[in-house]
Length: 384
Image (cartoon, rainbow, N blue to C red; front, side, top):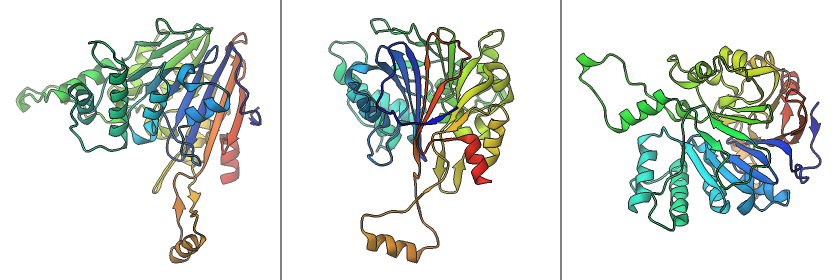
């Protein structure tokens, strides 16, 4: 059973697994304890109150030094709601390796070239600026003539362990995506491949950031964690989640924890993922998305997830926060002049899962909920 967290500043034991998921109404961040006080950070979001990267703030609260404790930083894709503040995380984590998807859009590819040439092709934008800052930091860390490059993720590549890095838990972090077909489609578009229409046998797929998001499989002593990023389901089985499912055929290794992709929306859901890759009553964590009229997950989404597992948690309910302003006169004027006004993001919370490595893989996690985090079943019950 989950508990309301009251020991946020207590660090995990040296051989204790931890998965911490942070999420306001816009953004998400995941921290993995690699053992011995060493951590991996996957994506980034900002604390809704302090505006500091959630990863840095949390590690500091544990008494950890982010400069030496963060060993790996991963950007699953370049959507703003997954990379807000990630360059600050990497710049602070001076001991860390940086990894990102190997299937990027043309603007992101130009930013990689810009780091090599010292020029800037684009006016910027949140995701682009984060990538540019990370490439600049990589360049600053290079003291010889080696090429400047992040570790590029593709299905089958192992991001952890890394030679020369501490590995107390003997943990493996492996990429399940992007698929070979997704990378090939990306390269083809970057090269401007466009055969004559009479020769086209197959239409080149148009892939968005979510279609090439990194999915990670984490394993330590039989404990398995599936981090779904924002990967979508595609009709073509060589792309998206179905490519992962097909690669998983014959592998008797279901995951006991699942960070549900794309904020629980139907675009990231497929029955085969739950049936073939995830254990029964897995511990599922979902981050919300609130933007304009879009609120994810919907009640229908929640009910679909609860039909798969009752052990499901939201880092925050998908509800916008109330508008607030330091100047009460401004706040009163806005409220009087409008029918309704909200400030996005609204809620912010933290779901923390911990388990001793010596426990059985199917043993329940110790679940702690901080801030606005809530059991999905409780959220549905109180909303209906």
